[in-house]
Image (cartoon, rainbow, N blue to C red; front, side, top):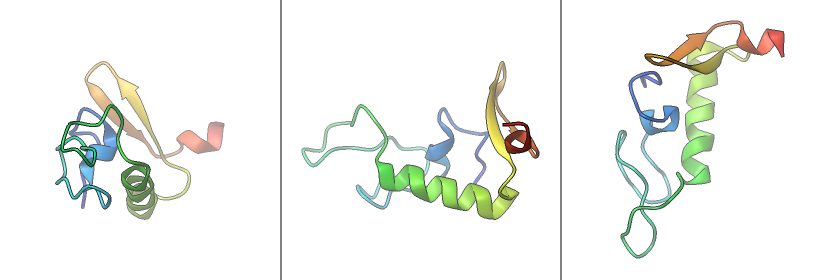
Length: 77
């Protein structure tokens, strides 16, 4: 299971289906250069796996130590 709190960006917990980068590796463009943003497909896959792991009501929030999982974060929205 991906650890969404262990990376610079939560979406880095999963590999990228667009460019093939492994978890914890930043996405690259068609020219092989690092992309300024993570690919949308990777972000969608991270969202899907996050919901599967923590449920529809959970949220990931920034904290001084990195990221925290709030199991009821979306209930308060």
